[in-house]
Amino acid sequence: MSRGLRAYTESAALTFGAATSDRVDCGSAARLDDLDPGTDLVLMRATTITGGRRLTSKQSTTSNGRRFGIDGVSGAINVRVDRATTALNYVTNTLPLVVNTWGLVGHTFDSGAAAGELVNIYRADGTDPVTECGYGTANDGAGALTSEAAHSFILGNDGALTQAFQGQIAAAARFARVLTLAEIQRW
Picture 1 (cartoon, rainbow, N blue to C red):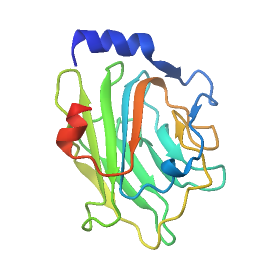
Picture 2 (cartoon, helix red, strand yellow; picture 1 turned 180 degrees about the horizontal axis):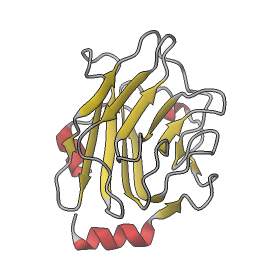
Picture 3 (cartoon, rainbow, N blue to C red; picture 1 turned 60 degrees about the horizontal axis):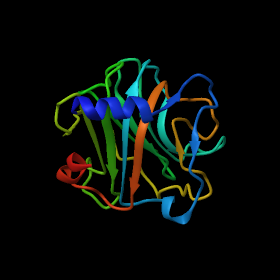
């Protein structure tokens, strides 16, 4: 990232984590629901690393739905998607989030991909290029995907408003297809 982009993101970013209710509720329009395949991208800066905090989610107080966020205090990144029998769960073991550093995190999801490749998680910070993370957990789960169509797409928290991301989010995007690594790098 150039110095100019860093200045832009700091001046234009929303701050999360001051209250557990911090969030941006994007609603539940059909174009945001059950994206399979899909891609979520977030330009962010974590100020504290706390497990369970959400960057994006499509879940309610009673359903875990789909969520993307921080797995633990190590800065690992997690994608979880509810399925009828066992939830899909991917957790990174490389390229952890770094406190007070602007970066891009993102993930793709495609239930039609080969086993062990349903999710790809990407990360970049500073001047490093976007690259795919390594995984400590890559569990595809089992059963039909659980619909999250009734839930709002939320930035910076979960549907129960208890897992506010601690930091700033300058931009976020949701795509109804899997973006290539080159497309994510351009974004």
